[in-house]
Length: 83
Picture: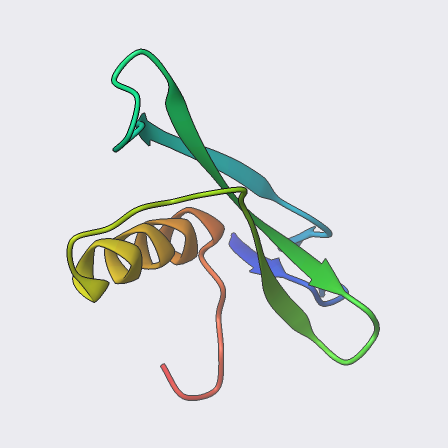
């Protein structure tokens, strides 16, 4: 069985219409608080898009954000023509 996001499933497949994951980390300014980063999907009919929402998400290097997005993509298991 295949699981595909954002498209109508065919026989023997399951479709995902939307998904949301909220990541959190200790606040870089106040150690008693947390920062949240919400990554979700949206499909307005043209395909699946990633949507990012946060008030603040501090990183030391761009690779930290890339790792979060790759984790989300892995959880979503989006199948594309270029994979």
